Structure formats: structure tokens, C-alpha cells
Length: 325
Image 1 (tube, helix red, strand yellow):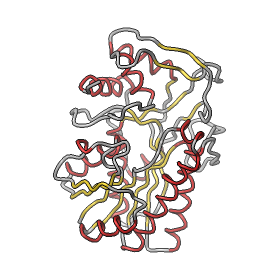
Image 2 (cartoon, one colour):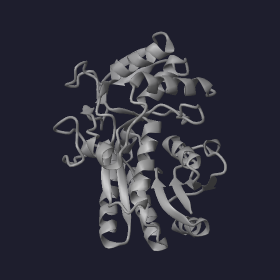
Image 3 (cartoon, one colour):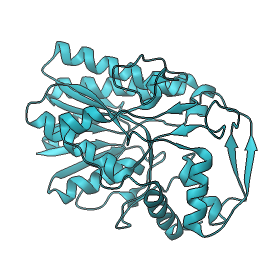
Image 4 (cartoon, helix red, strand yellow):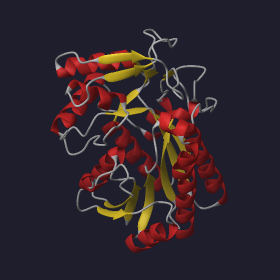
């Protein structure tokens, strides 16, 4: 039996593929390579280039490879882009996800893990934020992910189908062994951008907003190492395959760092300063989001091993140094 990983040629997906292979699982990847890379999918995983909205393709893959579970990463993730192109985000993140869910139901795949986001909370009223907090996305990105969560819940109610939605906080870092990392050109992840600037791959970097009601005026986020995030997916898959109920979990460390604190961590790792421009806020950004991760720790037994900002930055910088400009 095989695990289907959508978006498995991308940043987080490629780490998931490695973890599944390390555990002895068979893996097939469906990715349209719009932001992913063939080289990020290691053998013996099979890469099939295509769109998850192509139901004939997806259902053929499921049937031919005996897929037992789907881990769904494929989607668009840049908040400001979603504000500029909401319909594109609803197509890629919501309409295509609906097609994938329907394909799972039609082919009898009962276990489904969804890559959701802390953006579903918007600007939460209390920090750290729990899974039962009010859901008020402030961007089409967050709304597109929330809509998929709602579809999953309705589908699980109507069919023999169970899911786990993992609400990611800010994912960063790279495989500690250096096998994969964030390779996407023009990526917008803060730590990726800061590492590129520290290595001279960008002339400077921008900080968007210095007047938020936070200790230093910049946005605060909960940064989680990509390998710890993948471990959460492994725990979620075990939960579902053992007959566990559908559920939603935050994925974060329950500690937050400001944009300025992250930049200072990159300066420490790189051994020196780099140009930073302070600018106005950008649309769609929440002021502070930090996870309450008690639920996933208690119910799935998730125990992060890499919960250290300096370690996250060190791994990200090491990966960035190995990439060609």
C-alpha cells in the first residue's frame, strides 16, 4: 500500500516524502511543479507531474498504486498574493482540494491529512491560540484553507472518510542532514529571505510594519522546524490508521518571535549584519499568532526535537549556502 503526497516536490512535501521513505513506506507524488522541483523527490518515490484538480489522473494514480492515505500539501501560500488574486487562490486551494477530496471518496481512500494554516484565526483575541478559537481569516489565503477544512468536516460526516487538518504556524529550517530544504526562487518566508540577504543573494530585505502592538512593533509568529512539522504528520497518519477520529491540531511551539528577533538570529548564524529596510504594513498580515500546542502533544503524543530558533536558522542557512544563486 502507498501514501499519495500532493505537492511532494515542494518545500514541506519533500520533507514528508523523505520521512515516509525513511519509515519504509511506498510513496507516490502528484505535483504540477509550479513551485516544486523534480530533484526534490528522491527515489524510490514516484513523481507524477499533474494537477490535483485532474480527477481522472488522481483516481488512476490511486487505483494503480493502491493508495491507502493522502497527505495534501499542494496549494498556494503567499498571503499578499492571495489579496491581489483571490480567485486564483480559491481555485488552487479550495476548488482543487474539493476535487481531491471527491476523488478520495470515490476510490475508497479513507484517511486524509490536510495542510491547513494558522491564518484561519486571523487576529486572535488571545495568545496562545487554541483550536477552538474563533475563526476569522483576514486574507483569501486563510479563507481558502478554512473552506477546505469545512468541506473535510462535511465529507467525514457523510462518508466513510476520516481526516486530520494540521494548522501550521510559521514553518522554517531544512532537513538536518541536508537532503532537502526551501529552494523556491523568490520565496517569501521570512527566514528564507533573511538567509538569502545574509549570503548576498538579495541586496537587502524588507520588514513590513513596525507599528504593530507588539514589544518591538513588528509582527510576532510561532516558528516551527519543518522536520518537527513532518513528525506531526507522521503522528497524524498513525492516529488515522489506528482508527482515530477526525480532528484538527495546531502545529507550533507555543512561543513567538518578532520579525526583528528572527533577523537578529540570522545575523548571529551568519556572523554579521546585512541590509534591512523598514517599511509600512502589507495587506493581510496578522499582528501576532502563537500556537497553543497542548492538544497535539496530548492526543497524538507529538514531541518536537528541534524547538530552537537558532537551530532552525542554522539549518536554513546551511541549506541556503548549498544552493546556486
